[in-house]
Length: 622
Image (cartoon, rainbow, N blue to C red):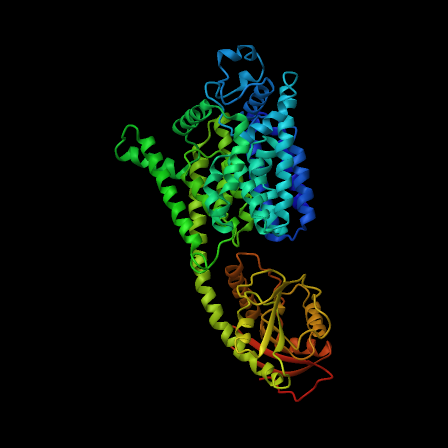
């Protein structure tokens, strides 16, 4: 609750200060605080999807009244919409064209930042601007608000689609992100339409509707042109025989605005935009600075731009080949959202101009990733500070802090991925040892049955122990945990940590491998394991004999589990002494059949339980 109150205060401050340039430092500071709170919520809380969506809509409503104060793009939206209601094609007329002299007295004309350029907003964006044109010339502000309404409704629709495909925690990183809320609900950038179409693409593909997914992605090209780079990756998955869908979609969208001059006018404006502007583009600016230091060659910007563009196209070629390999890159298949992320990340790195709102297409896809790209989260958060260039001439510190942090965090994450690869190998090797410890207590029951022994691996983690147990064909293992980190092909069930979704005596046996000390309510877990198990419960658990042991266990456990899960595994850490575990199990009505303890640095125990009405001989603790 406190986090949400702080966030509401931050967004309230943003709404009050974003329209006054002298107050932009406060706006930027409030945005930075909001990012910290959002990450804190992601790290510490378990919000419900309903709560995330409700709060996301609330903070968007706070910023709806904003005029186009942070960016003057909104004025061009209104101008283009007004031209369409005058029966004119916005791609054919410069705002300064003599044919439009009657409109130059309109208040919006004085606010245009590129009156000597043809519009660069593609046809589908123009269709959104058309909706606002009907309020002209009475009120440019309400014309802008109509356009904003169209864009915000589309983006909120994207939120609801995203909520159906990712967890509530992952949703928070996009839904409450201050950069997203400011650029869509505050400034009505057309990226709001883009993220809606991207989410529809991913949703339609996952729903087995290939034509719809191609239609929406093709439509996205005519909001912002760069999604064209994503089309090959979708066609690879749905079949190149459907290439007619993007072609036909493009024809339907472009035809209302088509004229022979449209291409040349659009290319001229885009060329000027690309050649004249560079903004927050760390790689390009760094190469430009280095090259000038070495030689100061005239015309260097154009050469660097071509080199970076060619490098990006080569990267796309590699990505397309890697995406098509059997089993994906390094044996791991990429989802459609993941490969879109990789393509768009490369595009941003190669871009010469990156305004804060350009990050939105990537931000809406990051929740799909198995590991959050914190380098990109940092870079996008710091980008808000670049607004101070226009009010306090403060720009370069944010460029260097943003990209330096991006590289440091990215290098750390890459190093952690490699360490996790090594850890994965260690976990697989250790899983064989754990399975060897558990198997004898399961195999003696297998001979009594004419079928494989059904086993529940409760708190299964990556699932490696269950996979080892199933290899001999004597056991049929089901994995269950409170979060999905399954790295096997075994059946997996997510549950709430309190009530297992299985009937009484559903399994012949249950195993809990270093699970109980992580449970928020370990008694509930034990009782549920007893309920769903008709036979034995085999437990491997960390134990301690002194306070020094307990503190050492806690530190080692936190370090290992943060390395395994990137901070997503809970840290309740209810360690007990072996005798305390045994006493607890006996109080819960179990007969403790076998107890074994070993280890000196990491003290471990194996405990075999059966209900009191199944009571063979018991071995003493060692």
